[in-house]
Length: 206
Image: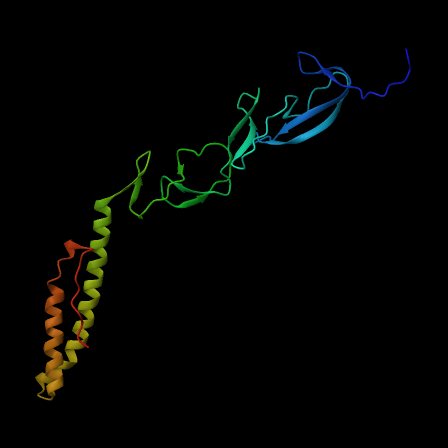
């Protein structure tokens, strides 16, 4: 028996996870929070010492796809391949706002890769559904605001022209303009805002 050896001493673990033979061992590590595989290292284990925290001896299978990741399962007994959507834009099922995916695994129920088509879309569990009532109400409010603004502008144009007529200082052009603006105001007042957003606005006089 020779007193020399060219072999590297290999650690052996007992059933309790502690080294029953001191030596080197290959360790595959996982992140303490996300459980994602972080790399491989060779560790020396003295007699009676176990693996580093979140270190394992079973070899993970590495996926070929970029949209996959490797992590330890929740029980900590095996490696698993999961979806990796990090840096992908998802959408909040509560607000519809875009959010950056920052973790591996399937998306939570609060996120989806489907983008809402309008700001009035609501998530029904599988798809976005437009809240037609809310959409119509918003369109009506917008039309009412536009109508009020245009009526104010028309009133501002009519007032000095009416003054000119009342004081008998109006020119023929003033009278034509006054009639045109009053006609325009009548047409504006007849706008039915409940038909929003399908509104045909009258053209303002030039």
